[in-house]
Image 1: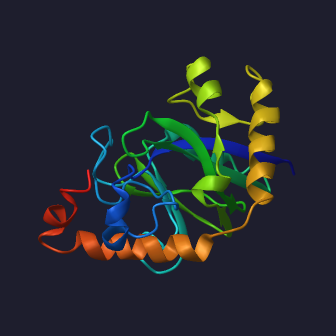
Image 2 (image 1 turned 180 degrees about the vertical axis):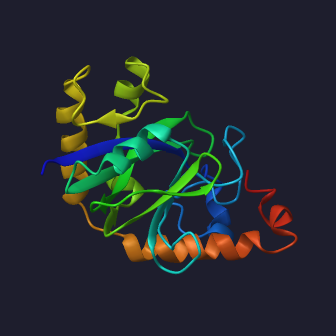
Length: 206
């Protein structure tokens, strides 16, 4: 069966002052908005890759609100699917960027509805890169008004997506995989969020 590549957006934890790295970890690793600092965040659950597992069990979980993605998974037409993650990321005191940061490989599985309209799937493989190795696609996303779009390599309406998303995937594969470091930072931020005064610790970082 055919392999499908899907490029999906998620809101990333925004960049904070560099001197706050001791509190929030290595900021060259672009994570989902674990600390809830992005005002555009959609709901209770963070949309994006849970590299440490939704239940912090080490699984490669992806939590999402996109019914379009769930319908693709339900049909089980593809032997394997690459979920390519596009971070909507705001560096400290700079403009918002759209950057490709990594991917999950998902093999012939379906999503699980963990809450009304919220789904989760688990990947079999992941690859995530340092900020310096990410791919800035802001010009394409903004220029073609694709900010909220799911971009699929099998799109008949937009055949250009195939070349784009597959080239972005190959770019990520060509860089060093920082997966273990991503997991460590994710767990660090989850632990920070459990502290009663965690917002006080980061208030001067914003």
